[in-house]
Amino acid sequence: SQKIEQNSEALNIQEGKTATLTCNYTNYSPAYLQWYRQDPGRGPVFLLLIRENEKEKRKERLKVTFDTTLKQSLFHITASQPADSATYLCALDTGGGFKTIFGAGTRLFVKA
Amino acid sequence: GAVVSQHPSWVICKSGTSVKIECRSLDFQATTMFWYRQFPKQSLMLMATSNEGSKATYEQGVEKDKFLINHASLTLSTLTVTSAHPEDSSFYICSASKLAESSYEQYFGPGTRLTVT
Image (cartoon, rainbow over all chains, first blue to last red; front, top):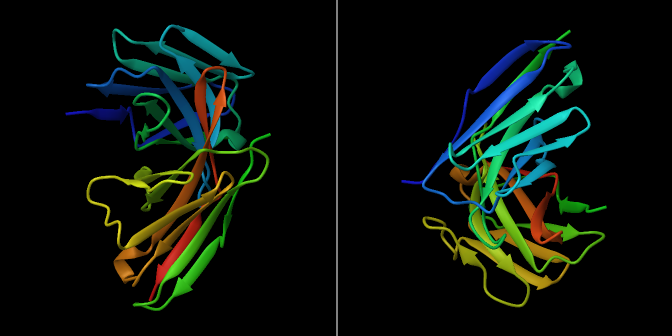
């Protein structure tokens, strides 16, 4: 069956460290993968999109990798700050941009 | 930018009544909009895909007669929860799809918290 799994329900790290979140999927062949941030009681906010032919993408303190052989994406936040505390969702395109399937999310807590 | 609004942001209604939620793309045209629901600490569950000028495509297990979707224009989609029951209480989120560099990015509304008493 098709599945998207994010490594852990919650991740606690110290301010200044790098947070690494994992997204694994099975039985999908996505053309691209996206990462979103969601704060409590709010809709998700788009962060980064990485295509199947891209290995890595960066945006400010964010870095995403995409390994289609391992069927895995890693999401890194460097020099993390308490303001980075939120739930991070990975999402797969299932073809043509007409349907996006979301993982359950990882709640990140950055402690000052 | 790519801004999507939802109205209302929260609503409380009595069991048996109907509630309409609006989703608007404010600064771009969206041929496709999506409706999701989200329970506490769970992921977004896609309910339906809404295309302008045509009938919505519902996901398996979502009752189309209960969750009426209308996509009247390229900037407006509405979700009506008919004969609402307490189990329909949830966080409903819409998104609008925008083409960017040969791939589609989704922009989400702020969500609508529905409580059915």
